[in-house]
Length: 377
Image 1: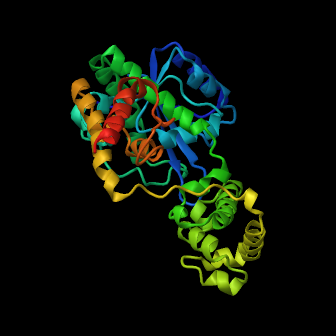
Image 2: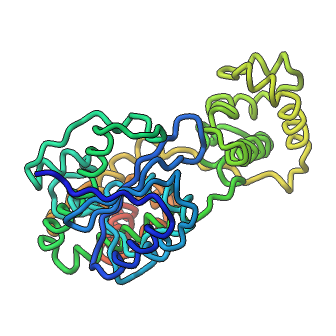
């Protein structure tokens, strides 16, 4: 069956359609974008589905995004997306707004135990019995005109995403639907939480092996790389490659030739920013001890694996009780943070990342498990 496609290529048409969409209980939203040589995604197309038709918004011809921002923020209209972390970046960049409430069909599939982290095509096949054509995800969405295949692919996405919602939503209990929306709100909150560039060093590979004085250098290097990537709109690795950060902080080169010997140091980086980096390293290395960052905790020892397994089992058991994909229950990173808060002898503290219904239903069981493990001889 041919899909009814409507193009939206000017501000007044967008405003008019957004008013209509705000009268609906839900809209499906998808984006196509390019992100090859940039830090930020570049929108190539925004698709909206109302359950019957596909609307294709050309972002290269729209200048006033306020009506779409108001639709995204309209709490009476559920916004349906799939595996949407990058879509959220695109929408935030264009409109300055993020969708609320947000219903992610990938999360819904997990809550219905259809599978964890299911790709869109696979979910459409599983739920709707439709085989989607492959092949346009990597095409050039900034070219004009878009090919017929691209247009058809984009329109199908919008229509089938709406159909997925109509099929999945009635299968969810009220509790599970609330949890899907809660997880959607958390995805939005994560994007809103601007990471402080000065905290990024804590996530750097092997940071725990550095002294506090060396961490002071790593902190400056990581913060500078993040700020420059955003300012120049370039991928982080085009500023300084990830694997060059740690050796720079450890060896603290003081000449361009020493910098060139750093493993994975790109000649372009030395050419463009070498002198600046040397100055930055020297300045950070001269900081007094009271300005050094705290040490980064070591990774959990291998002996902690058994305890980690016991904690994961709590999530798996709750997942079985609720018939939810077990991977959706307790994230490994959250459990590791919990263990690191007091390993090996406690007391332990639930990490901030364990929120909402997971904290309510499993928080105390996790703490009890750790207390029990501590009491064992």
